[in-house]
Length: 338
Figure 1 (cartoon, rainbow, N blue to C red):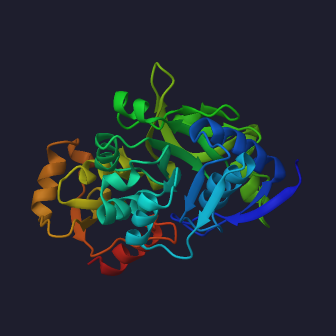
Figure 2 (cartoon, rainbow, N blue to C red):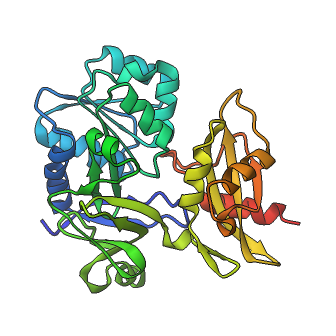
């Protein structure tokens, strides 16, 4: 069970992708955990649109479905209209997606295309509140999932959890130990944790120090044991001596009715040391100005957290999974800085 089973590369949204060597035990225990948050049965049908060269497609969908004796429906490429049609007409019971993919499916087929699902999982990056709200409003059995290639899913929230506690990541799965480390960093240990980063023993020691995998994500936990994402340690920047976590600013921007998605990065600033630059993708036919979005932030954030600049892009740069590539935005920001 401790032997290697797969070598999968992380999505590389904040830097160079890393090869994570995954053990045999990971597949088994992740399938057991998936029964908790997906409830798969032999008669179920799992529609898979996430690529199988990443953990989300292989270890969160295909492997758990096969362990349960369920059927797996693979699509060779993503087409939102075709996926929506398959969800309506194909007898699909389970579907998982990153937020960008789920939003495109909803735009193509409406919330009704998800109505027949027993479970619809979403994760891989922060999920915009309006996306969760749309699913809850339509009675979709939505599941918020949190994990990484190195850990698989370790936190999950049911539809009822999300109604009662908006923004929560949920609580730990049965076969994973999750704890807050120094500075509020999420730490994980248990049978689903990876073995090593391929060819990089120094990075492996840093990530697995003290017997825990250090995720680099920051969180808080409420009195009921529910977790909430605060930001990513490596993305934090310091503006005027104050720590700013982009995830908080991005959540505020996504709350604007004209904003489809947003990403914030810290850029060098001669006055403040670093200042936030927000890259914004607007909804089709929903105009907004930079001044309007800055005023929106000013009414909802402390002054030092507000971005200094808004940059509009037709589409944010993304990985094959649909995750935003922060490194590409930083490079673009440096190239366009005065």
